[in-house]
Amino acid sequence: MKIPVGISGRHLHLSAEDLALLFGGNRALQKSKELSQHGQYAAMERVTLVGPKGEIANTRVLGPTRPRTQIEVSMTDAVKLGIMPPVRESGDMTGASNIRIRGPMGEIEILEAVIIAWRHIHMSPQEAVDLGLCDKDRVSVCVPGQRGGSLNQVVVRVRPDFRLELHIDTDEANAFGLQNGDLVEIC
Image (cartoon, rainbow, N blue to C red):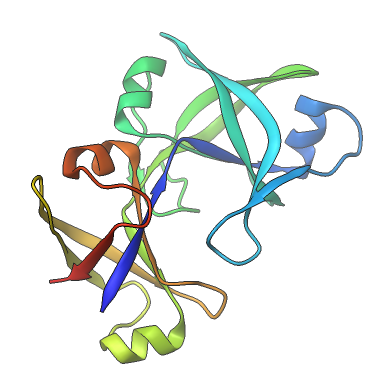
């Protein structure tokens, strides 16, 4: 089965409380565009990530809001910021790095909020059955092309609202010469 690639650039998911502190008042995120996963969207709002060694401006906020603020960066971003976030599955903030976030209405420090997202494949329950896989399984993915190879330890994530897609960060995509929408396969 061919699996489309989705390249995940640096982004953050804000809690409602942190959204209010950074952008003011009791406001909702303004939707810019829908993302490939059902109910997820890129918001109009952007912030600056402030680390001990540098800043990254225009970091995209994704919606909807979440119970806890979470930032996902690449290793290249982490070096620029001067932090050492762990590689974790989304939502697992154990040992995550601290960061300051600057918005138009203020700056806040968030503890244990920055991770490098573990590469993963989103799929529906039916797609998982078709592939003989279960949620949290780990697989290897074969990448074709001139810079092809394999990605090992790819986490399978199964939920009814998921659409089939491999999510990797910009560093991984660049290393393999991958673009959004390219197709890969489970080895």
